[in-house]
Image 1: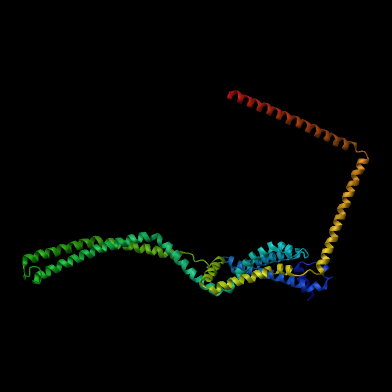
Image 2: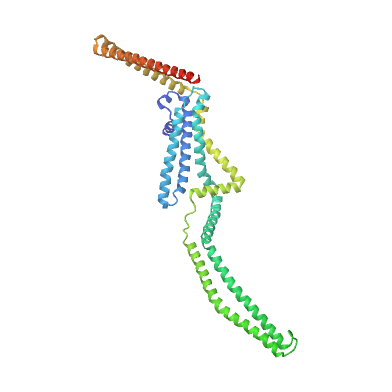
Length: 390
């Protein structure tokens, strides 16, 4: 139990030597340290879960190993950040001064809470997400196949149109032949045409027309059927090519972190309940992430803060005394150098002062001469302007 207490004190960033002198503060800093620890623990779990799906193209063992390592690093970073912020916030400056100091951390907490909450939301709503992932997968597969087929759509449409046109010609020729055959038949039995049974002359004419239509149909069939077969083979070949390309499409794993986030967004849009639950989960983690700072802000000033402030004050006084002593020693050395008659130094200083004085005098003379020259030029310009005006 003593080790656990010391561990939570370490998590809170407290000075344990000072804290030992203030027994009434022990529980407060145990709670503060536990808050910092569990914030880091949640961050490690969430980060590891997110990275598990980020490394989804790796072997399972390496995937787990990478998720554990990077999750621990992420959790340690958040833990160290919270510990530093809590330990660096001093009580006694007033609530608003402390709040201003904590504002950057509060903003950062909002960002971190969003990052932490999303991976855990993916696990909480994993059933709905898996269902939505399958729908998204089928849509993507259909889109890939449609995109692939569109490359051959024009070619297949042309072949199909040509086949349809050739078959249409045969159909029209067949109908024409059948119509003329029917005319010849009814002329032969007297039920149509001239209404005379056995009208040989008219029948021969009608029969000749029917035979001519049959010959045209035969010729058209000899020409069109090979073309139809050829174009049908091309059409079948193109269809087979498309099917081959479809089967060659690589269907990768559809469980990446980005896909799951998209699925979570789709599920939230479809279900108001899940959308509201997602918001409250994020608010929960926001409160957890802000807890170390809020605990420090809301905690009252205690004996530990008084002792710490007194020790820091003593340190500042000692520091000022040391600086004053060093300044006094430097001053005494300078006085000693002057008293021992460091003539060369004094002479050098005097020469520099004389040089500076002469330089300033020369600079003043040059400036005055420039002003006088400018004045003469301006007067000459004004005088010339008056003469030109006359």
